[in-house]
Length: 250
Image (cartoon, rainbow, N blue to C red):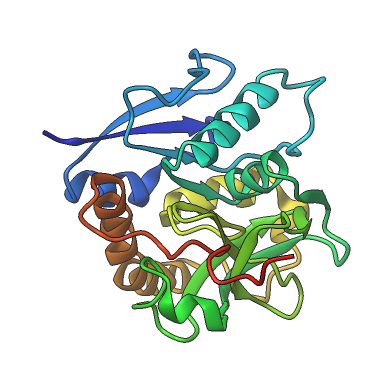
């Protein structure tokens, strides 16, 4: 029986892309819901995992996007139920917001283009992050940032500009500030739609040759990560140790 994954897509310009292909390669069946058009389930019943993708809106822009509160509740329910969860960019911000974190406009302005993030100590023993290189390639494209992680979060990757690049909540929920799902065509669409964000990238960051190269590197690094996420959802990869285990009693 295939692993059932609910994919919440907040923005029609931010599809599952390569990530969706990698999840399906690993045996997952995706139920993609375009928020604001399709109904987003209130619970995770019937699903083995939840993936929430990116988008151009703020994680708390409920007045303009009233379905955001439903997505946050869904993510909170998934975390509380121990369901494998992955949030990408806005999805990571929504995961943080749903579990007590703070998301605001980035204090240092937008971040865009190919980047390297640095694994933190906890990542070396994490079931999804342990096999990643010390500084994996990613694609940044965001205005908002996670200013404060939830109290129970474990930081997994960082950069000097925005330190909360990847984190885990509990044993099976992961948030990423960066993108791993893009293709060159998807990035071209974002550059045309959001020139203010694209404009902060280094010269040549969005040239065809550069995008081809970075996406080849992202594929090599993050395809196995996506496969491990499906295995985590299916129960064939052991989840992270309980971060509360071993804490001294009050």
